[in-house]
Image 1 (cartoon, one colour):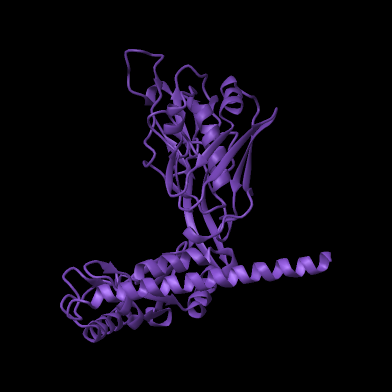
Image 2 (cartoon, rainbow, N blue to C red):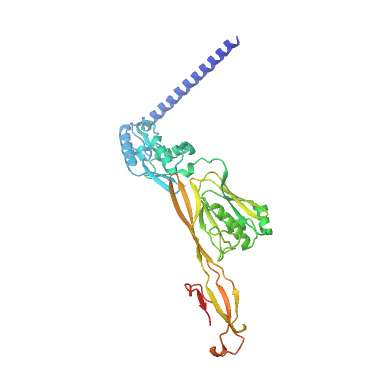
Length: 415
């Protein structure tokens, strides 16, 4: 008995669904009939203010309107293309390969005195293949429905000859993961860094927005020395370098500080030198900070980047210091004294390597130059008879030179 009741219930449900479908069908066509009647009751011509897509059909019959709209649609399809962009890559496809317009159907249901969008269908084959080619990603990783809706909205009004599709805006956000990280070794942990690790903890790089470290610390009332700001700036810079985060402003010190690695330093000074970045991605990334007893660690967390990025350091060019001679009357004859030991300078090219499937692109990020610290040696006077008489018998020769003077000379002799 229970089985019979179950079958009867199923039949009742099916009958109800069929009845509802019939009602909806009749109601829909009744509405279309009313619309069609309202459209062509007045002399079978469209009233003032009637637009189909962007085509003015005032005073035209159905046949005339259909012919005019067909001409305008064909002109629109023939002029301009669809520009597909993914990061720095772009390509063009013909609009005629992507759209099918239902012109006759649209004209039949067009309403008097208002604008009626054209019925348009997106042909997915060429479009999807182009998306996968330029991005080197499967179409499943994009919001294909939103892409089609966007193209339908623009094409239904014949709004613009050239259509642009920025694929990064439709890339589905995957799981949040660490896409890059960096560690800055520290000999000592200052109270300012301790406060940063405790109170700040993370920074958000908003989509399509700039970030300024000086603005951030000002808005968060974080007081710190230039040294602390430079450690923080260096950690941020090192973490974003192997990504597509753009570098708007960045500075380096005259001499490489002990906490920084050549090619990865970012000098920050209050009101003078900032670290500014730009997140060109359509989704945000977070920079999280972890302070240990020996280093400051930064992790950049967010969805996968559009391509693979890495940093390539060029060969370091060592710049030897010059020898600057000074003469000191206080030194005994024949003796000398090293005042400054001197240190090598260096120059290094930093390149960001971008891998796009089988293609590789290299972009020079910076060419860092650290000037050498010249060696300064004081020598005794050669002899009083060869020197001009001065009022002070104990006077020294303690001159200095500009950076450019005698650049190619290894020794500068001041007498």
